[in-house]
Length: 144
Image (cartoon, rainbow, N blue to C red; front, side, top):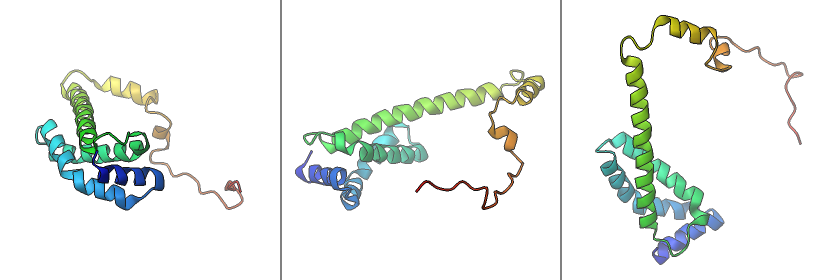
């Protein structure tokens, strides 16, 4: 890690200096984006999501990154791992969509059974219904 990068990362981790973190993002955004873009075969939207994820990880893990670690190397590895996770997730999503899209694999009675057994959780019961407003006397008071 260059001395400047180490200082910026340490200031962010210890003091919460957002301007230091912003400088790191500005310095390494192109590196992370281009690495992500290569990993996801040119999908710019997915590459942008990966960039956001990588820099969020950097912010969360700033305290645990050793001072001698090269930020560029850490970011490249984090980008590679985030891209692999994103590709796995996209593959699973595509497989589920394909499974549903294949005619004859899901029939109407299956959907009726799922709806009647309320397998979508408690949120499914409240869809389309308005919850009654609480009067001020019924609202919970905050703990002070």
